[in-house]
Amino acid sequence: MSMPLAHTRPAPPRFERPSLFAWAVLVLFLAFFLQGVWDADISVERLGRGINNLGRFFAMAWPPAAGRLDVVARAMLETLNMAVVGVTVGVILSLPMALLCAANTTPHAVVRVVAVTVVSTLRTIPDLIWALIFVVAVGLGPLAGILAIVMDTIGFCGRFFAERIEETNPRPGMALTAAGASRTAVVAGAIIPECFPSFVATSLFSVEKAVRSAVVLGLVGAGGIGVELTSAMNLFRYREAMTIILVVLVVVILVEQIAGAIRRRII
Image 1: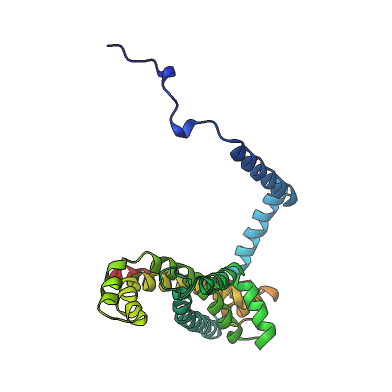
Image 2: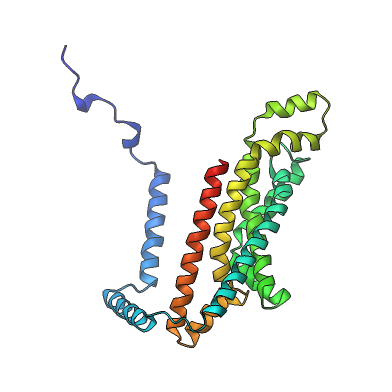
């Protein structure tokens, strides 16, 4: 029996003609992309000049200066303290927020809407903006950075904690309820134990994220190694700036490796 011709077969779904909406989204994306390229004033001359200036910076910044290594180490320790304290407080506050956000643990639909709105708001505002707000509120120093990390962590962990809670198996909770357990007992005895590995993994991701954020928060006066980096760059002490950059690189990689090892062991 002869096989039907290829052109008589219907096209696979992936080859169907895009809809009018898809074309509109594509055109809108291209328009924004071209506008962004135009506004950025990208040119071969500017890129070439930038590469030359970058080479001059590295030439002036090498070898790194070790004269203030003790000051840099203390500032890096302050950055780690900011990240650990901020994430710890943020994770503790994220758990009740997640229980209010999750559809299967919230006490009321209105409470869930309010909690989801709060978490979404905290997640939407960048941590750098939170740092600027808290610098105005509590002044310069690590406290502003810690509070900014707390807000960012609640927005990050609150969302993922709530999603994991909603994915739990309802049968253990139903069994506890049938045995006369209270709502709190169901959460503590069935939901939290099942979600605990995921909670730990998300919290470790938050630590990695917070360490990188804490470096940037120092650029606006929120304490940590970012303050030293800003001072070094503003005073054209590029060798000292290179030392700070290398210290940050080593510490961030070390934190990521430790967090990854803990995550693999738990999961």
